[in-house]
Length: 269
Image 1 (cartoon, rainbow, N blue to C red):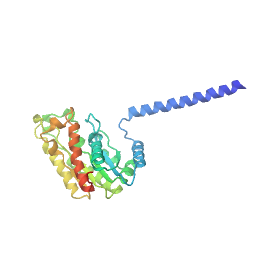
Image 2: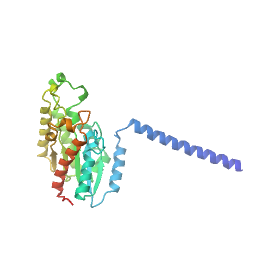
Image 3: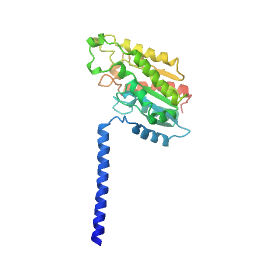
């Protein structure tokens, strides 16, 4: 009789261990195959953590967009988003609830699609403030192959950029009519590469399109950063000559903070 129970016990234990190993394998495989967390479930998990910490006294910030909002290029891992939250907390005593839903490599079409998912909709609906960077990957696709020859014949797809930008804003306003949207505009990372010619013209034109949108949508604030990087690319860019470094993100965070503090009427402690 004891042998029978021992056999059942060993069999059950073996099955449990096998299931746990299988779960661990699947989780590890998922992390490798989906490193950017593009599936909607990941956004929902991130927002669940955001919702649990949400309180009446907290400023709920939702961060959207591409690798700049993710903080790529900053060796400290802070980026402009975490720097923003630190300044608001340390200098203004403002408690923060943050959901960062940015995805490295995202273009305007990708962000427009993301905003249709349930997780992103829920996060946006709870936001007091929305911050984002998007458009750099649209304007300069395939930057690693950029040459003077192909740039001379290059014509940015401004029409698609504007259409996607409108769709992004429409989706945001469907879920949240009032939260201010702080859209960080574009800088020119190739300003010092004179061999490419006048690349600033493309950036200035797209930033102008954003300013036009700001006149049409309620509480849309365009944060200019072109001037911050102008003449400072060696100081403000990461070694990839595209993303900001720690100094670049710090400059962006400080300017963004000024706009938020002014609109939210926050006071230094």
